[in-house]
Each structure stands twice: as C-alpha cells, then as structure tokens.
Length: 371
Ligand code: F6P
Image (cartoon, rainbow, N blue to C red):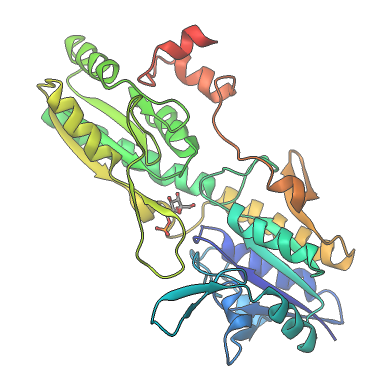
C-alpha cells in the first residue's frame, strides 16, 4: 500500500474540504493508495504522539460544501520554526525539517500534498529541496499567488464582501451616512477591488495605491453635492495613506510571524473627521466572516479540479510542483516559480480599468497621470 499525506496550512479558506474530498475520491479509484491527513498542517506529523487521520470515502462524504477544513490548519510555527521553551522560559524556534522527513519515511509516507498559500508553498519548496516528494495546491482568499489564474476561496470572499456592500448601501442611504467597509486581502487589493465594482462603491482604497485623504474627502463631498446622500468606501486592510503606514500589530501568539492587519477603516474615519468631513461616518470591519462558511459553487468546482489534479501529479511523480489554473486548463508550475512574486493589482489590470471607467476613485488621481 502506498501512502499520500495531505495537509492544510495557513489561514483556512472556503473550498479546502472540497480539495480534500477530491484527492480522496480520485485516490480511491486506484487500488494501492491510502490517504492520510496530518492534523493542523505539519503539526500532526511533528507532534508526539503523531496526529494523523485516515481519510477514506466515508470521512469525506458530503464535505465539499462545508467551510473550514476537517484536518484543521495553523499559520503558526511549522517544520522550520518549531517553538520550544528554552531554560530561561523564553520561546525559541528550531528547525525540525530533517527529523520530520525521516519520520514520514519511517511511517511509509510516499508523497505529501500541501494545500496552502504563499507561506506554505515556501515551506513546500524547501522540503522538496531536502528530498521530500511534495506537491503544492494553492489556496487563499487573497488571490495573491501569481502562478495561478485564481485560487479557490477568493470568489466566496468577494461574494461575502459584495453582500456586505449591498447591505451597507441600504442603511447608508437611509441615514445619509458615509460607510467605510474594511475587507481582507493582506498586501493585495483584489477582494476590495472586486467588491467595490460588484457593489457599486464610490471609493476603493487598496494597498497597491497609497491614497490621499484629501482626495477621498473631495470625492465624498462631491457625491453628497450631487444629491446622492450617502457614500460607500471599500478599503483593504493593507491600504495606507500616501504619507502613512500600514495599520497592524505584531501578535503575541507563539509562532505567529505575521503582522495582524486591521484598523485602517477607523483611521480613515478619524482622518476624514480631522479634515473636516461633516457627514456621519460608520465603519464596518468584515474580518473573518470573509473566510468562514460555505464555499460558492465556483470555488467548489475549482477546489475539486485542484484536488483531482494534485493526486494525479502524485501518480505521475511530478514532485516539486504546484497545481495551477491556467484558463481553461488545470496545469502545474514549479514550486520555485510559484513563490517568485506575489499577484498584486496593477494599473493595467482589466478590472482596474473597468473600475476607473465606472468612476470609482482610488483616492489618488495622480495614478491617471503616471500611466
Ligand atoms: O491570508 C488570508 C487572510 O485572511 C488575510 O486576508 C488576513 O490578513 C489574514 O489571513 C488573517 O489571518 P489570521 O486568521 O491569522 O487572523
């Protein structure tokens, strides 16, 4: 019997269970393969006792529409930065990758499928270089991986953010208010841009285009002068003013390396007020609602395609590669290429042009001149 170990790493994302199910369903068509799930990314294999789960047809039945991941996930620690307390009681981070690879070999694990975002793919690439038979599957609601046309979970997040804009429009119009909706995306403005276009927002502020708060205020005022007595601003969590910084805080959670973004919506409210905005402003931070719950059909389909492809890559021994969507094909790229550069919004992005054609302001008219 051959064994493939599946894991989900990084933040969860709608569609993870559909990938797991697809891997198991495709593997069950072969007579000699068993699928194991490592609980909480690589923690399951690193922990003592080992936390692995046999993933068979029964375990994955009907999970394609469930949010989250049945094998759990983590965006802390990992094989290269495993937290341990030293004698002084302080946390230190140790490299357990060699030991982990040896353990997998001892357990008869022939291949690994790692479903994760850019951080997870970086880990996969390092492990591949150390000799592990590993395949990556891209996931993220942020859509910030450039080696694939799209990632699953992204469209579900857009759907949720758009629904939020639709809801805020009705309350904003009723009260003649300015509403600021803060959405996720880390360094990428994709969720904000899509939700702004789909929801008909007036202003969209994204990390790729630092904004001028005076321009934002002018746009808000112009909108009220026109007689449209409300305004919707969609702002990405990683956005920042031209002369300012990203708003976030270093986490105290052990093994959590990222800066926790959040709060730029409230900063914008304060700044608009300081500049004399006379309209009432309310801020909504959508947060993890964008990652929770049922994946929409598009994401279930893409996730299923990724899962089947990943297992077929195991069969073909195409290790060191990541599954990729290259419309209309599901193909693959080397992990090396997959981690080269992030997928960020650029001025020549078709949707960016559409947004500007619709009159959406990015709080920085200068961008028109720079083209
Ligand atoms: O990368 C996905 C994402 O949801 C980002 O959009 C967000 O900044 C981050 O994860 C939040 O991470 P956590 O779940 O650790 O708070």
